[in-house]
Length: 106
Image (tube, rainbow, N blue to C red):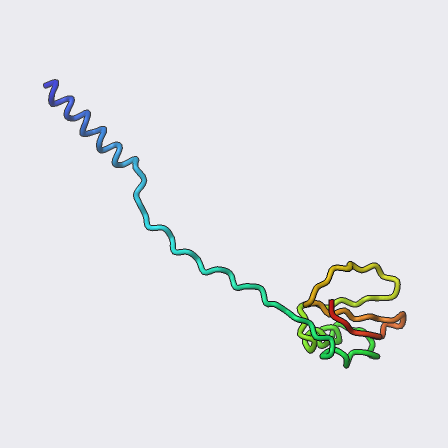
């Protein structure tokens, strides 16, 4: 009887261990890498048409697209601006009347 009890205890322990062990599941497939951010290279010549025109959101958008820039910023007289170079940014210099006086990249 002792042998039979011992056998049941060992069998029970083996079954409990098998149930507690995590099932091996295949690793999920690696998700596709996110698409890289587009690289913009500003060309101010494409935005020269804006010189002399009053600044507007539509003008900013058109100048950005035609210059191939990723971003655009309007620089007003006396306004503080950052000096970091950004080859994908179009700068529109604006006078006190709100007219574009120059276009440049950076």
